[in-house]
Every structure is written in structure tokens, then in C-alpha cells.
Image (cartoon, helix red, strand yellow):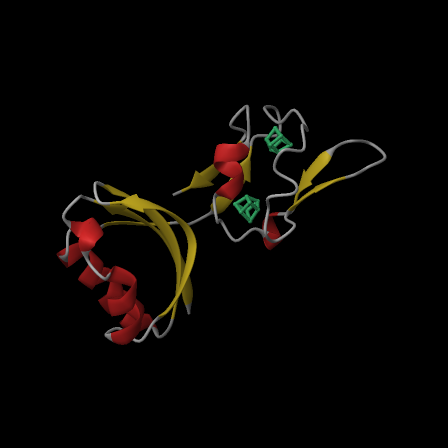
Length: 133
Ligand code: SF4
Ligand code: SF4
């Protein structure tokens, strides 16, 4: 099975080999979708793949080591009223979930292609994109 989670790191937790331990000790495949972390803490968005028991064990391990864990249940949403179709997100979306129709100048969002990496969220001037957690 697969699950996406947002991790929140305190300064203490940010120095631990979290992803290494998820792979080596909990037998998970770890896809880092987004990382903003330094010695004073930060956030990561991970996709974890593996057996259900291993994913549960990995999440328990994270929590026991002071890492905040929130599952992403519904992925990413666009506020269609807020989107100005500026196109800033189109070239940076790694999965082509955001595309522009060159005839109409309208930007479309295909949720099925979105991997919730979060890159578009900071790039969107009116903050029309949001991660649902
Ligand atoms: S960056 Fe934001 S406002 Fe611009 S096209 Fe993308 S979603 Fe719409
Ligand atoms: S979060 Fe944004 S940039 Fe990332 S895949 Fe989804 S639509 Fe594309």
C-alpha cells in the first residue's frame, strides 16, 4: 500500500536519519515529494510504500522520535475562483498535472496526475493551490 504524510520536525528531530531508518529498519520505499528542513526544524512531504504493518511501524517510529505526522487524505485542491490563470505553476509541476490551453489561456488542474509534491503551492501568487490534510 501507499500513503502520503506531512512530517513536521522540531530542532531535535531534524538531526535524525529519519528517511534512512524508514528504509533500512522499516522496509519502506520513501519518495520525498517536498522538503524544507534545516537544523532548526521544518517540514517534509513523503510518499511511503510498503506493507501496511511496516507503514504503521514506520509512522510509530516517527512519532516516538518527536516527528509530527499528518496523513494527506485528499491530496491537493485548487480554488478555481482564486486562480487567475497566470501560468506560473505550469512549467514547475513535475507531473504535468497543471497545463495551459494555449488557445484559451486557461490553466487546468488534473487531480489524478497530482502527486502532492507541493511545489505549486508556494509558486502560486494568489495562493489558489492548497494541500488538504
Ligand atoms: S500559479 Fe496559481 S493562479 Fe497561476 S495558474 Fe497556477 S493555480 Fe492559477
Ligand atoms: S502539488 Fe502542484 S506541482 Fe506538485 S504535482 Fe500536484 S499540481 Fe503539480
